[in-house]
Length: 173
Ligand code: S3P
Image (cartoon, rainbow, N blue to C red; front, side, top):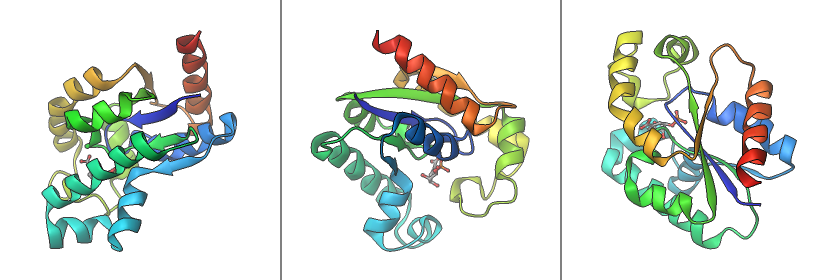
């Protein structure tokens, strides 16, 4: 079994569906944001504010390097929303991994993230329009990195997890 990397825009359901998927497939669940927080000893908004986005991105790439090189057991890995924008990260994901894009409309994303304050990149664009703008810039990167795409609008995370599992099964045949 390969690592399963879940990519896509903030709020598309990578973490919630990823947790369900890991239970379904009986694999460990990892979250790159969480791994960065543990390594840095501080929360993501504090890393952005005190060290800057470039430092965050360097830590993120280090996490992907370690996952590609060191992981002995396959896992379901929820990736930060900007991870697939860096080619180096995608190269690490593709080494022994399947890359699954989770997709949702800006309206769905807005509903899911509007009450959260832990995403520095949404601080100044907390509206459907702001989300659409950033999403349009990023979609080509997600599309290029993904082996396949799963829509999540209107679905419970347990259903999304089942859909991912089915698609992986097909992919691996
Ligand atoms: C980011 C997404 C966040 C986190 C950081 C940057 C991005 O992760 O990595 O705030 O660039 O889209 P989630 O997608 O899990 O919210």
